Length: 114
Length: 116
Image 1 (cartoon, rainbow over the protein chains, first blue to last red):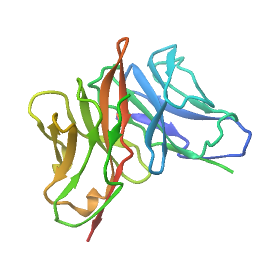
Image 2 (image 1 turned 180 degrees about the vertical axis):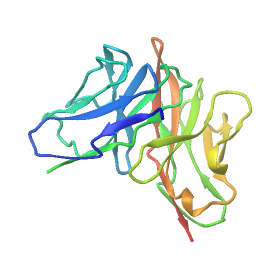
Image 3 (image 1 turned 90 degrees about the horizontal axis):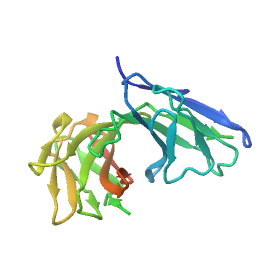
Image 4 (image 1 turned 90 degrees about the vertical axis):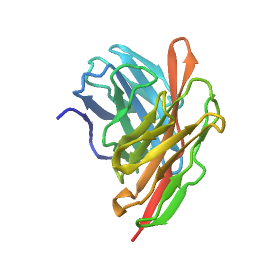
C-alpha cells in the first residue's frame, strides 16, 4: 500500500539534545511538508520541499532543520535551539506543489521533552 | 496574509442529530477550500475540497460543505452524525502568495463529540 510513514510514533528527549524525526513516502510525490500541531493551535508549517535538494522555511522554522536528499525521504531535526519542542509533528506530501493538491498525511510523531 | 477562523473549538451533538461546523476565511481572491478530519493520535485525511463549479461539495462519510463567496464561508454539514464521527475537523484554505507559490493555511480545528 502507498502511503507516508513516520517513525517513531512516540519520542522522548532530554533538554539540550537534538532529535531527528523520520518521514518516508512511497507515493512518488514531489512535494513534502512538516507541520507542528499543538492543542487548540491547528497546524503550523515548519518546512516544505517542492523537489529533491531544495526546501524552504515555513512559518515557524526557527530551531528546526531538514534535508531532502531523496525524493522519498524528508527528515526533520529538532535542535536544542527550539525553545518549546514538545508537540505532535505531522509530515505530509502532495503530488506536486499545486494549490489544488490534496495533502496526504502520515500518522504523526509525538515528541516529549523531559 | 490569509486567515482561517473556525468559530467553535468544541461541538457536542447527540447521535443521529444534524451538525454544522463553521469556517470563515479572510480573502475571497482565488481560494481553494478543504476540510480535513483527524481521529485521535492519527494524521489528517481529506473529507472534501472545493476547487470550482458547484458550490455544494459532497465528501466522504456523508459530509458536505457549501462555499459561499459573499460571506467567505465554507461550513461543513452532516444531516445525521454517528459515534464514529467523533474527531477533530480542520478547515484549510489555499491562496496564491506570489512568485508561483501557494500558501495553505489551516484553522485551529473543531472537536466534534458525538454523544450516544
